[in-house]
Image (cartoon, rainbow, N blue to C red; front, side):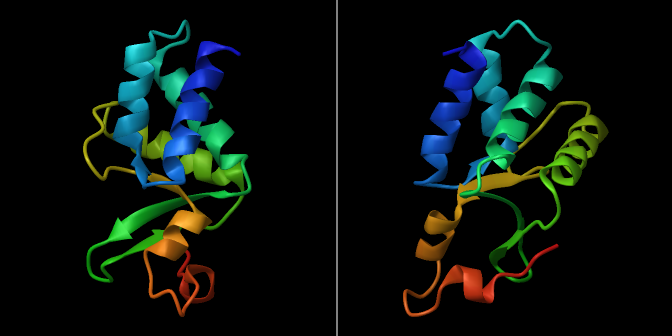
Length: 123
């Protein structure tokens, strides 16, 4: 398994237990010292995560006090991540741009009588 795939697997496993922010992916890429540029590596990990049907991309909405799931194709969401990454010149902080998690984890965040997938908002 390549170093990039190892980073992706570690992040995907964490997504089932927590929300994982883009800054955490950046830190994991930095620690792994991959051969690609940081931007290319971060986008590659994000793209691999987005290709997994169980992984959701979202952003936390303070007004709603909830994660708002992104809609669209993996390609359009990856373009959104790239635009956010570049607008911050790669200096990604807590909560910037995107969060990743599984639908299973997101379901655990809401009242057990109501499935997150039945109440989710998409942007």
